[in-house]
Every structure is written in C-alpha cells, then in structure tokens.
Length: 81
Length: 471
Image (cartoon, rainbow over all chains, first blue to last red; front, top):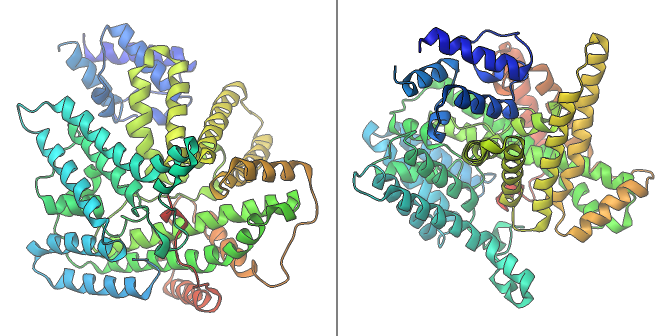
C-alpha cells in the first residue's frame, strides 16, 4: 500500500471518530493538536487503525509514536513496504 | 540533610566549588559521592538500603543487554523487588495493623520532624526512578547505563532524592554522561530558582502552617466556613511547600548544568481537574501516565470505554496510595478518578459557541476548579476517615463566621502567595524565573531584594521539614 493511501485511510478514520474534518494529517502533526483527540478517542483511533489495516501494534510500537509521521512509518513497516 | 539549613548551604558550596575545580573526568565521581554523602548525613543506616536498590536495578538493566538472559523473568522479578521494597517499608506495617493492632509496631513512623523519622526518606522517589529505568531499558527505549557510579547518581541524585522530582533515565542519564563546564547563565538561573524556592517555603508555606495546624488539629471547635477556608489555605501551603522544594532541587541541579523535570506548571491557573493533574506533581502524574495508564489502556484496549475507566482508576489509585497506606489516600485517588470522568463526560455533551458566555464560563471554571481541589486536599491533611467525615459534614452543614486569628499569622503568607499568583498569571506560559530573567536589570534586582527582604523579615525558620518528605 502506498503512503498516500495510508494517510488517506487514517484521515477518514479520524474524521469518522472525531466527527469533524478541521485538520490535516501531516508528518509533523501531533495527536493532541487536533480538536477532540483526547486519551479516549486516541485509544479508539488506534484500535480502528489496527482493524482497518489488519495489524496489531505492540505497546513499545505505540510508546515510540511522537507524531503522525511515526504512525505512517510504522504502518508502512507493518504492511511490509 | 534538610535542604533548608545552613548545613545544606555549606554542603552545596563545597560540592559546587569542587565540581568546577576538578578535572572533567572526576566530576561524575564527585556527584556520585556527594549524592551518597548527602543521603548518609540524613539517614546513615538507610544508605545500605539505597545501595541495595541501586545495585539490583543496575544489574537488572545490564542483564537486558545480555543475549541469553531470561529478560522477561528478570523484569518481573525486578518489579517485585522494587514494589516489594516500597510495600515493606511504607505499607505493610500499617496494613497489617489494620488486621491486628498489635502488629502496629511494624509500621514505620511518618515524618513530623526529621529526628523522629524511621521510614527511609526518599524511598518513594528513588524506587520510582528505578522502576522507570528498568521499564525503559526492558522496552529498549534506552540502553542500560554501564557505569555504576553514573547509575548511582541517576537513582540517588542529591538535589532530588528526598522529595523528587521523579526522574526519567532517558532524560537524566545522558546529562550525567555529559561534561558540564561552568556556565554563568545556568548558575544565575539556578540561584534564581533557589531564591524563589526559599521564598515559597519560608514566607508562604511556613507562614500559613500555624493557622492550618491550629484549625485542623482542633477541627471539632470550628464551623464549616472556617474549615473550608483552612482547607483552601492548606492547598496554598502544600503548593508553596512542595513547589518551593522543587524549585530548590531544580535550582541546585542547574548550578551543575542539569535540567530536571519541573513538578509544577502554575496549578492555581487550572481550569479543570484534568488540567490540574497536568500542572501538579507533574513528574509523578506523567510517570503514572507513561508507566501505568498507557500500558494498561493498550493492553486491554479492545474493551474501549471500559479500558479507559480501568486504566484511569488504577492510575489514580496508585497516585493516591503513593502518598501513603491510609485509606484516606485511596479515597483521594478515587475522588480524582470520578471528577476526571465526570469532566470527560460533560465535555462531550456541552459545547459553548457564544464568545461572551465562553469567557464567563472560563472564569467560572478556573475559580470552581481551585475551590473544588481545596476540598479534596483535606484528604492529604487528615489521617482518618472519621476526621474527614467530621470535617466534610461541618463544611456542608455548619456555615458561620470564618475564624481569623488576632495576630497577623496569615498576613505574610497570604501576601506572599498573592504576589506569587499575580506573577504567575502575568508570566503567562513562561516559567516564572525565565519571565523574571527577561525583565530590565532594575526590575530583576528589585524582585531579588524584595524576596530576600521578605524572607529575612517575614520568613518562618522554625520548622523546615517539607510536607512531601513524609510521602
């Protein structure tokens, strides 16, 4: 899967869960900067991403995520790119 | 050794001079010996316990880099050791005495003065330092520290060993490995923080303590309004006492070129309980968030909302119990859990679009948060559920005229706090001492001289133990 497709898919997931589209998921974007993205929605978003892409993140995978770019890189690795 | 003492100032000057006069390769050894000496002067017997904890955790960290070691088994055994140490010294005697009162002899006394202390001072802090380190090395967030003296300095760094801030290996160990040269700016910044710390402790905290003690030690004689007012004053006292200690610790570390985690970010400007816990005892709350909340949440994330409930409850129970074994601390933790969940629920239901109403709501939120947290600070002050029930029932059923002493007992402490609060609000998002450093020279020196004058004229030097020594 291309990175662009990964970004698009995650954007749709986040829009669906946060119920708004007032954001752009750039590599530098951090979760807390987006309106409505709190600890509860963060966990829901992670779970939905896992379901959508058919992957499972370990705790240390999640611990090392500092921004959206890290998430995209992680997914590219998990999807075997 | 009490950090508000001539002994400490003398110790600090000697270590500071030796540090910058020594050849670079010996600086680390000096810090290690200074940290052990600092601890030993206070509690010589418990240096053995500290060294035991340091040795075990150092070896555990190294074992994680060995190919064939049973890492998972060692990790869990190290957790059992560290938590077991804390439980034994801090909790076991008290909990056993609840089952059988004759076992109360096993309970170490909590501190009222340093001379009565039996509980190993700083054990909560240095044990949390150790647990955080072993988790980070186990999860490969950082490499283990191979130099034992560096590791001793990390776990027992003298500015923070007694009352924190709780350290993170990945932040502090690289600084220990770095060579620090004398930096005039950092030394001045450190001295500024130390001065602010002494101001908070000696003028505000010590100034307010007599009133708080007088009211709560005789709570049955006071009406609800007085008790609530005393709770608010106690909230200020704890903040000034603990943040004063933190400032002295951070300032001391900065003299040697070290940057420690700040424990406070203007908590009296909080606009919700959730916001409060991002601003209060930050080193502990962030430690619990990273090493408890997130691991629990992600392990059971398939349970979604229930996972958030469970992770939040366990985290706040631990924060509560971290303060001590009493049921009152557990109730404190549970109360914070309930308040945070209520806030999360309300924030999802209510969105204010009207700008003028938003401003009014914002002011209300700030004031309400402080008034609410004042009430719950009572759980940290009183020792039994009976006392708490007694105080709470009076607060809600017995209003009256607030008791104010005839002597100006509260005057200087309150005045000092008012100045501090105004300065914190004016400084906005900047750290207060950074804000001061950016003023004109005449303003800076006026502030320094004013603080020193208040310390000398209004400071209370009688009892200089810190509230958080007992935790």
